[in-house]
Each structure stands twice: as C-alpha cells, then as structure tokens.
Amino acid sequence: MSKIRLGLSTVFMLILLGIFSAVAFAEDGVPPTPTNPAPGIHVGQIDNNGNLSTHKTHGNFQNNTNSCANCHSTHNGEDEMLLMKEGEYDLCMSCHDGTMGFYDVTKGSGAGTFDDSHLSSSMHNVDSSIKVGSAPGKYLNNSTAELECSSCHNPHGSANDRLLNETVAGKAFATSIVNGVQTSAPIGTKTIALDLQDDPEYAELNALTGTGGLKITKSNGPKGLAGYNGVNDKIYYSQFCGACHDDYFAKRNVGSSSNPMPGKPSTGSPITATHTHDTYTHTTNSASQGRSCAACHYAHGTDATVMMDAVGNKVADYTKAVADGGKGWSQEKAESYMKDVSVKGSSLKKFTNNAVCFACHGSNIAKGQIDPQYLDGTGALKGKAKIK
Image 1 (cartoon, helix red, strand yellow):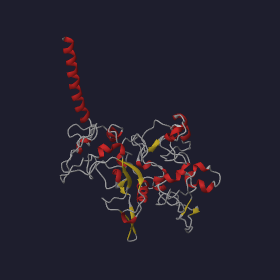
Image 2 (cartoon, rainbow, N blue to C red):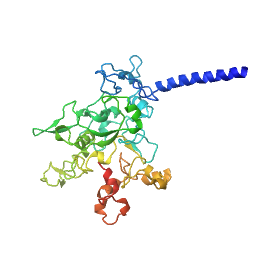
Image 3 (cartoon, rainbow, N blue to C red):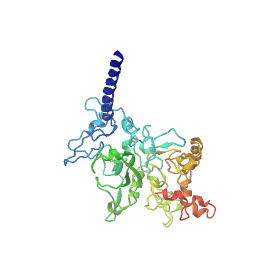
Image 4 (cartoon, rainbow, N blue to C red):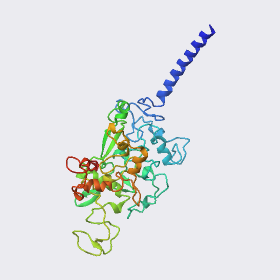
C-alpha cells in the first residue's frame, strides 16, 4: 500500500511540476504571448484604437505603453539615464545577444554579424570607446562622440527602417535638391527604406500582432526605389554611411574630397588649384548596381561565415553534403577558403577579398576564361545577382 501511495504522490508531484513549469515557460516568453513576446520583455496588447496589436519595445509608443520599463529602471538605474545595465552596449546586448531569440546580432543577418569568434572578423566596434571622428575615410567628420549602438540606431523610434537615426554625427544626413539647393529632409521623413520580409522562423510571434505592432523581419538591404523627393533610397543609405566616412561618399570620376591640392584633374572638370584630386574612390553615391555602400559592406560587421565568394556562396554552402548540393567540406576548410587576406583586413565586407570586384567585372575582364558552371544565364558570375 505504501508503494502505491508513494507512486501516486510522485505522479501528483510531477503533475504540479508540469503545471508550474508550463506557467514559467509561458511567462518567460516561450511560447510567446502578446504581452510577453520574448524573455524579459513585457509590453501592452491593445493599441490606442482598441485593436489587438502587440506593442513595440522601440518606438510607436501607445498611450498605455509599458515599453519604457524594458530598458529603464525608475529607481534603480545603473547610470544617469536610468538604464537597467551599466553602459549602452551591455543594455542592448542583454536582448540582442540571442536572449530573445529574434534579432540576434551575433548571428549572420542582412546587417552582417557582431561575432569575432570566426576568421576574418571586423565590425563597427561599439564597445571599444572608439570615437566617431576616427572613422576610416573621414574628412570633415570631427565628431568626438563615442561610437555606440545609438550612433546609428534610435532606441526610441525613427521614421527610418531598423530604427536608423535621422541624424548622424550630430547632423541631418539625408539631403536632396530643393529649388536648386541641397536641402536636408525634414525630421520625421522616412529616407531609408529597406526590403523587409516577415521572418518565417517567427511566424507564431508575428501572428500575435496587428499591422502596427511588433513584426520580426529579415532585411535584404535598401529597396532601390525612389523615395523622398524622388531620390533613390540607396543614395540615402550611402549618405547615412557617408556622414561618418565622408571622404568615401563620391563619384569615381570626381575623386575624393581629402586632397584639394593640384594633382590629377577630375575627369571632365577644369584643371584648377581647387578642383583637382590626387586620389579617386569607387562610386558610392549612385543608385546603380554595385555603386552604393550597401553593395559591398555590411552595416554591423563581417567574418568568414557571412562573407561570400564571387559566385555568391558562403561557408555553409560548402559544408553541405554533396547530396544536398554542397561540397562536403569541413568547417575548417570552408572558413580557410573564405578567409580574407587583404592587408587592411576584411573591412565589414560582404564578399571576401576582391570577390565582389570579380563578381561584378569578371565576365568582362576575363572573357572566355571562367568555367561556365560559375556563370548565370546572362554570362555573368552568379554572385553578381547578390550585389545591391
């Protein structure tokens, strides 16, 4: 009888544990609920119009918002901004290190990766106390501000996709010609429009919200369409980058701005003491394919696992089994193949070494020399289609 009693007690305890585990499981954000979409994140469920719409943590705040408490502590802040972590980087990474599941910046995405555990890693070092004014290719950028996540993103919301700032390095970056004058876009104007697609991995979470609420998406970079004042969003994207790397924001046949001394004349321009250049740069301020910052570089960072070769393959494509279309290489061999050996490092590149140059120009400079298996139906290297 005692054995039976023990067995029933054990079953009862297991049932209780199961109930409490299920409760804890749900309240930890897995599976997600409208008010608890991720571990530690607690937001509202009804919007200002009375509709079901899981609130966003960043921006689009409703009049019953609870989003402030996801980052700030009213009476126990770690710094003067009442942040829940000591330092901006630690606060951002407390969610975006994979804790939430979605928007894990340490994994490869449309913005690259913040992971230095693989070969050829380079990134915007937002936790290194580096100054914004020390950016490669800076000319007029003399900002003494520290490079942080908020140097590029506004945690309180932005008119731009991915919370990208409307001002960079202390000034409005998006400009266009208005009545013959280069004019800044008004604050609150969307200038960076990204090709965002719902992430199928988070279909369950996306189903919890209305059209104005939280959506987990994947980014495929700038849409490449005309935006505010008829300017292509690729150009606005490059202006965003050029706010810091201003000497690199130029047309190839005009030259860079850092050398306004007598030297090589700009193509099609008169030779004068003030309009000549000793150095030139690849075009970055055009909407044409391969002529914007997004064509060659990731925003966050890169490494051997997220870079591509000239046919658009990544390490994962080469480690796949032969039966699945891969080469069956080991991870070590694949990363060694994709390793960037450039003297100045991988520089946040989307393509390893000079693979982007070969992908774009290879079919013209090496006519008849490229194995047909690497070419697409147009005769171009397959990787060219992946260049924005």
